[in-house]
Length: 69
Ligand SMILES: [Zn+2]
Image (tube, rainbow, N blue to C red; front, side, top):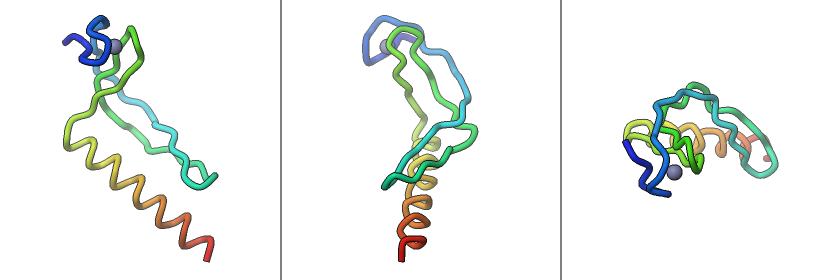
């Protein structure tokens, strides 16, 4: 598959731990799987994986806010 962002690089399926930061607090979202452009470095995720990532971020945000109060 060709990268839709730069139109150049091949997209390669990869799994990684994605660092995420909210309000100065850092976490890692484990085992995120997506297509990674070998040319520009952009990532593309399936709808299902996007939902999972968004849910993990929201959950972390909630915990950061809760810990502050
Ligand atoms: Zn690209």
